[in-house]
Image 1: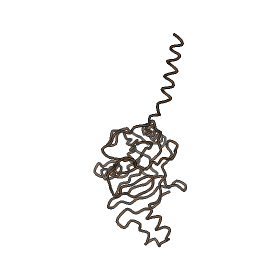
Image 2: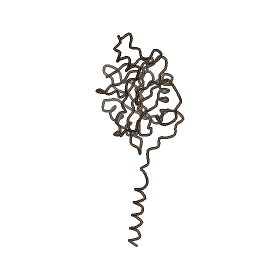
Image 3: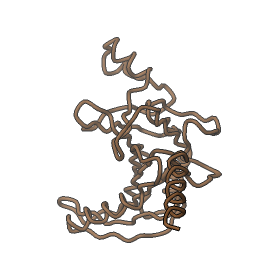
Length: 225
């Protein structure tokens, strides 16, 4: 009998090894954010390498720089701001639950407060973040798990409290395309962005400040460090 059970265990172990590792399956979505490898509607977007960012009238886009790398983008519309960043994630699971808990701890450590709420993209974090010389500022933290990536967004300014103001920037999140690529990346490693080709070309020509307008009908591109 022991030999029978021993053979059965060996057979089960061999079968388990033969089954390929299952990848995390992001929930089916009727809207974005999209993965570059899945079908997504055509739209006017700025090509930032790791993100294809939707643009619209009155948008100003700033790029978030860490060292020599561009790691995020900020969309400014009237009195509202949307920051978006994409990170690598494991094959087998999403990471927004973990990241959201860490964000809550970080805000609490600063003396702020957070509350989990259900929003249009699932569970999000409504926070009040201390600001120097001001009352705590409202921020909505949104996260969407995709195939091997996490898109994290933060709504601040008027859009953090006003649903009408938020609608425009929520539309940006819905229409973002994440370009993860196939290269190996550690979980939570930022998916690096780059300047759009028009902006790179304009900078290579070294124009005067008045001539640096890579998007005549699109957003203004600037950097923040």
